[in-house]
Image 1 (cartoon, rainbow, N blue to C red):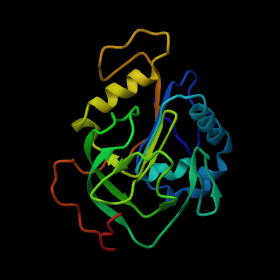
Image 2: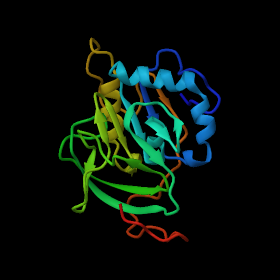
Image 3: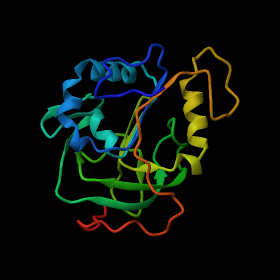
Length: 209
């Protein structure tokens, strides 16, 4: 079920999980910050231990603030815009078992964002890759990372999310791409297919992060 973070003040009734896709919050920071009711409900959902997954620049919405404007406060970090664009593929290894991946799982993802987070990772990071410092945030059932994954190429992500969103007293669901559990999803900016070997060339140049 879609949610418009610019206009909707509430999550759909009975929301069991939330997926925040990659986008461009740099363009809508003021509007996102103004929707305090929705921000509060997103924070409450995370505090309640429900799965909250954020990818790409969507993670900036979960930060305490972005460019000085208050956000959801789920992730203990601040975001800021930069003049450079981070772009390219990463072969990442999961640093924790989450609704996205099992500890040690390896996945290929794509990064394309101008906003950056400080710190880059939480006490429990989401990923590591290529000898770089850890990246992302794992807390309760929150998985937040600026790495965007190719869900169609890794259907186990949806399977894990459905299982994590199921009520505790419910029987373990058979892996499937749909479920009776209600999952709210913000519109995502699709990244290029994970099988492409070369990232697109940005006019601002590639910055490895």
